Structures are given as structure tokens and as C-alpha cells.
Length: 469
Ligand SMILES: *[C@@H]1O[C@H](CO)[C@@H](O)[C@H](O)[C@H]1NC(C)=O
Ligand SMILES: *[C@@H]1O[C@H](CO)[C@@H](O)[C@H](O)[C@H]1NC(C)=O
Ligand SMILES: *[C@@H]1O[C@H](CO)[C@@H](O)[C@H](O)[C@H]1NC(C)=O
Ligand SMILES: *[C@@H]1O[C@H](CO)[C@@H](O)[C@H](O)[C@H]1NC(C)=O
Ligand SMILES: *[C@@H]1O[C@H](CO)[C@@H](O)[C@H](O)[C@H]1NC(C)=O
Ligand SMILES: *[C@@H]1O[C@H](CO)[C@@H](O)[C@H](O)[C@H]1NC(C)=O
Ligand SMILES: *[C@@H]1O[C@H](CO)[C@@H](O)[C@H](O)[C@H]1NC(C)=O
Ligand SMILES: *[C@@H]1O[C@H](CO)[C@@H](O)[C@H](O)[C@H]1NC(C)=O
Image (cartoon, rainbow, N blue to C red; front, side, top):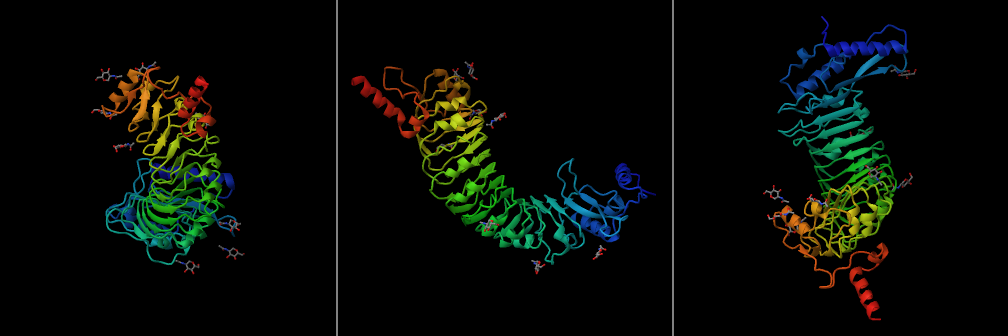
């Protein structure tokens, strides 16, 4: 009679153990009520009517359910010896053999029952489910779904809707992940009312307009990812002030402009900052970076910020990746980057207007993956004492497009030319000692190097003066 499915058995045994631990009353395992049971079948049919859900899972769906249907037990508030069971999580779309959620059919739709018939639903998850004809949120008054804490739609290219239509009255939401869908329109002000929100990921949609001021009210936010949309205008200048919990901020690949707000400096716990590929104006690299002592990755590439690379690195020893490409940066590369960023594994400074030498401190970076300095105006001798330049140059150290650079060693030169398949045409051997003024190796202290934009020549000048004095 009963389906002696191994999973079924396991759940029975498990439930018994739990119950017998709590009280000595008879272990009556509550069954899912018929309304939720029926609604679950109908939702499964709406996702994939090709599978005969009722005959594959004929019994109580909380005892034996497809992966993705999760129930929880609740004690009735008023009666001491009654438990009930309810569907609390629904996940659809096959992810992997480890997460074999019900697969979605080509004609999958979003059933309104999801929002009316599961009064205890906490999590709703759709992965790669809606790929064909457009699917939208049903236009129904939200009531019971006020329990919803997690709303996750990942890679559903035919899931269409305005964000205000999607979020509306889900006031309990802690986690909103809508990425790779066709969610469009402005980010509505009501976002600021979702006071429990810890993650707001809206990347890879078609959102437009400005980032609303109300976003700055979300005090519990840990992750904010609005990347790859069509957002424009200025970022609210109060963002960060009440948001010290934020760990990740990704606003990359939008059309944001104006100044990067100083208030970002209040993101004291931030580990990941990506503002790249926007239109932030030429106000320089923000100094507040020096306050973000937990920072691990920072990307500002593709914004014409201009100015020099500031000396903000002393307390940023956790940084592993820095992307400062194509930013109109001028002046020298601060040697302090090499000296303080001990764990740096990626540094992109390519396509700027940087001058001066390659700091020999970069040779100290043991775990370095790639240093890309291509297409600048760097000059002088590339020399990393104690580090094997031959094995790096052209591979993990990219120097093309800096006609003024030279190396001492013919092996290094050849390995550079060979590794870039001959396109490394500009790199040359340094002139031998005594032939011509060599670029002075960086023996001066850090502060001297930074104080003078072309310290090499200044020091040289001083030396000559001293000799003739
Ligand atoms: C529980 O009891 C309170 C007051 O005694 C009552 O207002 C409430 O409706 C009861 N709840 C349920 C679920 O029966
Ligand atoms: C949200 O809830 C409020 C009160 O509960 C109601 O007045 C309003 O119409 C609801 N909004 C939407 C979009 O459902
Ligand atoms: C920050 O929080 C304080 C206290 O709740 C409030 O008065 C202030 O307006 C908030 N500031 C912003 C920018 O949200
Ligand atoms: C650098 O990485 C090493 C190894 O992962 C770690 O032990 C060390 O604490 C890191 N240093 C800093 C300053 O983060
Ligand atoms: C440097 O410039 C050349 C020529 O414009 C280009 O082909 C190359 O991709 C650039 N390098 C980088 C890292 O962008
Ligand atoms: C440096 O690296 C190159 C290429 O990886 C290798 O052939 C050479 O022996 C190395 N030199 C030293 C001194 O380790
Ligand atoms: C680079 O290529 C040239 C010619 O193909 C070869 O003679 C030379 O040994 C190579 N050098 C290195 C360092 O690989
Ligand atoms: C050089 O060419 C070879 C073969 O064409 C290719 O496999 C390799 O990736 C190239 N190396 C670089 C640095 O472009």
C-alpha cells in the first residue's frame, strides 16, 4: 500500500526520532493538507505537464516529494500536542545531479497558485526555467506570500516584468536574486521598504533610470549587485552612510555618471567593489579606498577618472585583485602598491598614460597571477632583483605598448618576444653602463619616488650636480 521508497522510509524514521526526542506522545506524523497537496500538483503541472506527477508521487507530498519541494513542521500556537506541515520552499529547473529540481518544459508558465495557495512559503526559486514564450508575474493581490524570504530567478530569459510588479508587497524578503532575466523599468522606491533585505542582486536585466535614494535605507544589506543593466544618472550621495554591513557592491556595466560618492567610504566591511564600465567623471581615484581595510577586489576600469594612482595601499594588505585599466591615469605607479599588496594576484593598469619606471617592488609579489601594464608611457629598465623575469615577462608580466622600456638580459628579451609570438617588437635591450645615461634603478626611498613625478631624472640631475660641484 504505502510506497516503500527508500527516501520515504528515511523520512519516516527521521521524523520518528525527532518526535520521540521532544515528547512522549504518540508519533503521529502530520500530513500535508489537501489544499496545499493539490496546489503543489498543479504547480508541478504548470512547470512540466509532461511528467505524470500524481502517479509518480501518489502519497503525501511532504513524505515523498520531488527534489525542490520542501516542507517544514510547525507547532500550533494554541494547542500543545498538534503539529502541522506546510510547503515552505519550491525550487524549479534542473540545476545539476546534486540539485535535480523538477525540470522545466518549453511551455512552462508561472502559476498564480504560487502566490495564493502556499501560506507558509519562504523560498521560491526558478533556474533556467522560462526560455521560450514570455512569462510574467501574475497580476494578483499579494496576501499569503507575505512570508516569502527568498525570491530567486536565475537565467530565465523569457521572464519579463517590471521590478515594481515583481517585488510589490513581499515585505519579509531577505534575499532577492533576479539575474539574467528580462526585468525592466526603474528600481522602485518601495525597495527601501524591504527592511530585512540582505541581498539584492538584479544583474543582467534591463533595468533603467536612476538608483533610488531609498536604497540607501537598507541597513542590513550585505550584497548589492546591479551590474549589467542600463542604469544612469548619479549614485545617491548618501549610499553607505547607514550600510556598514555591505560586503559586496557591484554596479559595473551601466551608464552611471557624476562623482563616485564620498559616502562609499562608510562601507567599512566591503570586500568586493566593482564600479567598472560606467561613465563616472574625472574626479580621480577615490581616496576612501584607504578606509576599506577588508577590501579584496577593486575594479574601476573603463571610467575616465583621471589623475594619479593615490597612495592608499598601506592598510589594504588583503587586496588580491585590482582593475584600473583604461581610466586616463597619469603619473608614476606608486612603488607602495608592490610593497603593501603582498597577496596581489591581478593588477590591470593597462591603457592609461602612466609614466616612469616599473617599480622593482613588483618583483616582491610572490603569488602574482598577472600584472598588465600594456599601452602606457612607462620607460626605463625593468628589473626585479631576486625574481626570474624570464619566466614572467610576456606571460604574467605584460609590458607591450611601452616603447621606452628596456631589459638587461637577452634571454629575457627573447622569452618576451617568443611568448607573445613576435608581436613584442618594442621591447629592447638596455644600453650598457657607460654608453648612455641609464635610467637609474630605483634605489631612492618610496617617498622620494612619489614626491617627484620623474624622480629618476631628478636624482640623476642631482648626482651630476654633485659630481661637478
Ligand atoms: C490562538 O489563541 C488566540 C487567543 O487565545 C486567538 O486570538 C488566535 O486566533 C488563536 N489562533 C489559532 C490559530 O487558533
Ligand atoms: C500592498 O499592501 C497594501 C496594504 O496591505 C495595499 O494597500 C496595497 O494595495 C498592496 N500593494 C500591492 C501592489 O499589492
Ligand atoms: C541613517 O539612519 C539615521 C537613524 O536611523 C537616520 O536618521 C538617517 O536619516 C539615515 N540616513 C540615511 C542616509 O538613510
Ligand atoms: C596572504 O595570503 C596568505 C596565504 O593565503 C595568508 O596567510 C595571509 O594572511 C595573507 N595576507 C594578508 C595580508 O592578507
Ligand atoms: C594595446 O594596444 C593595442 C593596439 O591598440 C591593442 O591591440 C591591445 O589589445 C592593447 N592592449 C590591451 C591590454 O588592451
Ligand atoms: C627562469 O625561467 C626560465 C623559463 O621558465 C628558465 O628556463 C630558467 O632556467 C629560469 N632561471 C632561473 C635562474 O631560475
Ligand atoms: C626564442 O625563439 C628563438 C628563435 O625561434 C630561439 O632561438 C630562442 O632560443 C628562443 N628563446 C627562448 C628564451 O625561448
Ligand atoms: C603563440 O602561438 C601559439 C600557436 O599559434 C599559441 O598556442 C599561443 O597561445 C600564442 N601565445 C601567445 C602569448 O599569444
